[in-house]
Amino acid sequence: GDSVTQMEGPVTLSEEAFLTINCTYTATGYPSLFWYVQYPGEGLQLLLKATKADDKGSNKGFEATYRKETTSFHLEKGSVQVSDSAVYFCALSESRGNEKLTFGTGTRLTIIP
Amino acid sequence: GAVVSQHPSRVICKSGTSVKIECRSLDFQATTMFWYRQFPKQSLMLMATSNEGSKATYEQGVEKDKFLINHASLTLSTLTVTSAHPEDSSFYICSASGRGGEQFFGPGTRLTVL
Image (tube, rainbow over all chains, first blue to last red):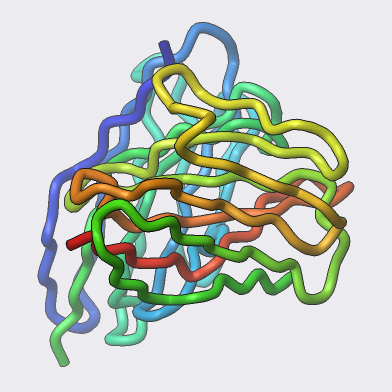
């Protein structure tokens, strides 16, 4: 079945550091890929998505590129801020996001001033 | 973005009792609602999918008689954990999607069964 493997946390970085959170997936078809973010005390929010190979999703300075050849969707940001501290989840859906989502375990990110 | 609420945010109950968790879409009509369970340091596991006015579809391994789901309106779904036991202690998260297809998540409910 489908599965998502993401970098285990927690990850602690200094402000303005470069961020990478790795995510790889296993799927039978051609899934859509997502990154969700959960800020303290809030529900998961969609951060960005990509629906086909070589697509790049981007939002709030975060980027992730759908790499079919390596089955990866790594999350990157060039310069993190304290406000980026949150838990990040990689996920996939076989049906363009309006059906079942399969999640990774989540990576807790803490940014230190 | 759309807002989904859950109530209660935390609940502690005795073993053998039933607990009801509500999930509401506050500013949109949710044709589909999803219920997830999250164990510490593990991913969200989909328990069931419910469409308004019809029976929920449960994932393999999820006991439908233990986790009762009711999606009675386009803005409300409830999850009732019947005869709860300590192993049911977990973090339960709902999400809701409308016609656009994107899922919007609630903040979760922490259930502790003593």
